[in-house]
Image (cartoon, rainbow, N blue to C red; front, side):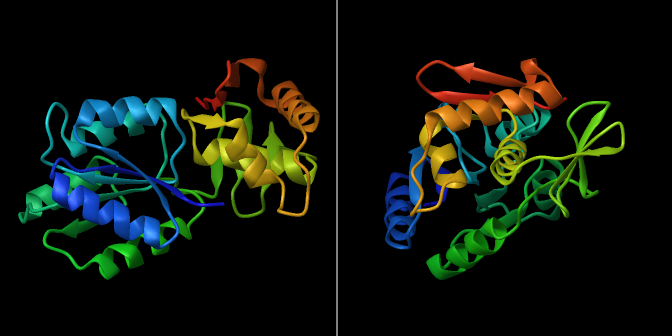
Length: 223
């Protein structure tokens, strides 16, 4: 399964260079050239990583990511910027960034940072326990679900589905992305089975937390 990256960069030449380089290294890359377009893409699609230039039209990278973090989106983000001040660096991390690379940069360095960040599973959580609501928590170390501190047994694929939702809280995840995440290459994805996993999760964590988006997929929202 290819990792999907959103690239927000208003310099067309640099954008094309980065897109081509990352695609050659096995990533799917979706470009955006202003902050509002990037915000719409994040709402409509599921991404594994954000690459965000800071000084872009309409909505700068810091403001964009802060809005998404406030909405519960935990997708990792790397800022690409020519800003050099310590204050800017602090602003970047305070707004929810995970890493920071200054222009001009070597493409191999960007690749290293992208690959390193994608190896992590969860982001912006100081504790291994991720709160879904006041009564439900998911332990990211043990991959166990707890309701009122009591463990709830999930089958493997249901647990994988919940973890996928938590990693992309607030984002629309397509049916195809879920199939790729839950079923290995030698297995046949099942729409019926997926509906069963969704139904099982809704019984435990609440029906309102997993919304079916017609013809697109599902959006999960934790409190």
